[in-house]
Length: 259
Image (tube, rainbow, N blue to C red; front, side, top):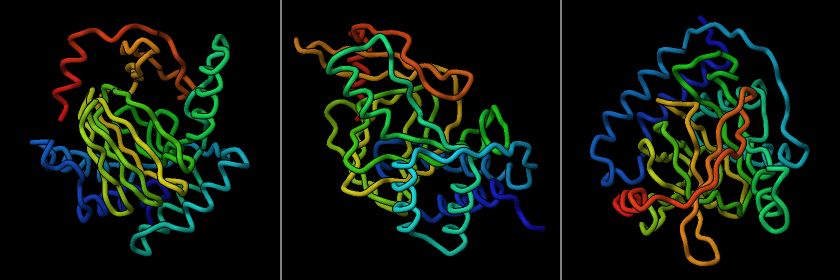
């Protein structure tokens, strides 16, 4: 029996996770158990029927990044074919909406960041196979982009398919390089950031847990005070900013323990 595009995507991603090297293994005591859980969930969707056919390409600029990233895919012939097929079949969208109320440098910075991040759900609320149990797909980021410190309720895997980046867990922990064939595991509510190298990056992402919770972005203001902004997923899967606040002291303590 021939698998569907999303079925083959999750099959090959599960197999790649079995063979790949996980970064930060020493920092996550139950990492192996989590990887087994992710793989079992992926495997459960291999034979699921496709019920969505909507397909949108990313913007022309982002589509050029995608072509470069797909041309540089690393892995087996089956893995490369599965990723290429998913990239061509899935519905691409810009992840973050720029807040129309923002102005000046803040709006300019956010606009540049938002235009550098696109995603395509293969399985999920907006995926080729709709699901509230699993969220997986492709995450495209422009060269040189810095995705600042953030946290979310879902536990997350990033499998690097193309390009190089550095991922940091916690505020003071040194970042580590993630290259094709490696993956990172980020526990629920673990503060983390991503910094791309000199080429577009294509990640295969997997989320388990709470998909609809807040995605908190952290930054220091001009007075050195830590602030955070809540972004929440909208019905169209795009994230919109809903809250801005000073980071509670208790959260700072927890962030400094994420090492």
